Image 1 (cartoon, rainbow, N blue to C red):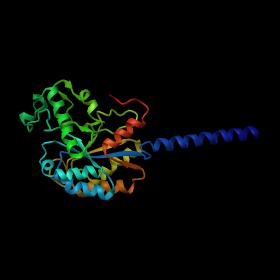
Image 2 (image 1 turned 90 degrees about the vertical axis):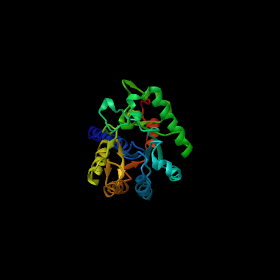
Image 3 (image 1 turned 90 degrees about the horizontal axis):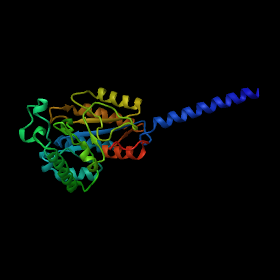
Image 4 (image 1 turned 180 degrees about the horizontal axis):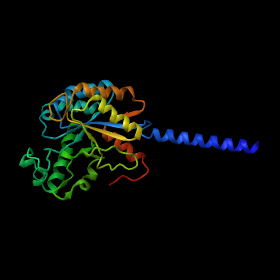
Length: 271
């Protein structure tokens, strides 16, 4: 009988340890099951007019990657400054949004802003000058970067290593959810959204919850203003879902999530 009691007690202890381990694993993202970063590219009017009011009403903050030459940035600086003061991240998206044109068959890329015509020094200088511009607007020294068109090199030469000291992290355009322990902070995957339904957006979040992963959304137009677009109604269905389930889903600017990763994972930052 005593042996039976010992075996039973040992079994119960194993079960309790396993349950606690599962609970800890399920809550690794700032005491949430997963993390979601809502990122918006190109500094559009709709981001100020439609997106930020919706995010603010839900108590969420997003990351807005703004090229320095974006007209809505120039004309509405005070509004962007207010957004930053209210907790939204103004992310670096270069001064002129250069993309590799000739080498990737992108005929729409203007020759002056064709990354194939740049030198490594030019793109790094441009990125750093954008940081100066953004700091003049929001007063902040820490932010994240988004590769324009996902391009990380000039010709065959990567420039990612040259900007490690300029940013907390950088977002790519590869459709990939990220695990806390294995994420490369200078190649964070994201899901580019174009005409998906609210249901499809929510399905991505549910997948991130199941995997205990970081999910980064990459929006451009929301209710118009860009050829890559999602209907405002469908976007807002996502926000409603995130709000309803905020106990399990951590929604924060990418800079904040990246800082959490640096401070809480067991392996060194991939620099």
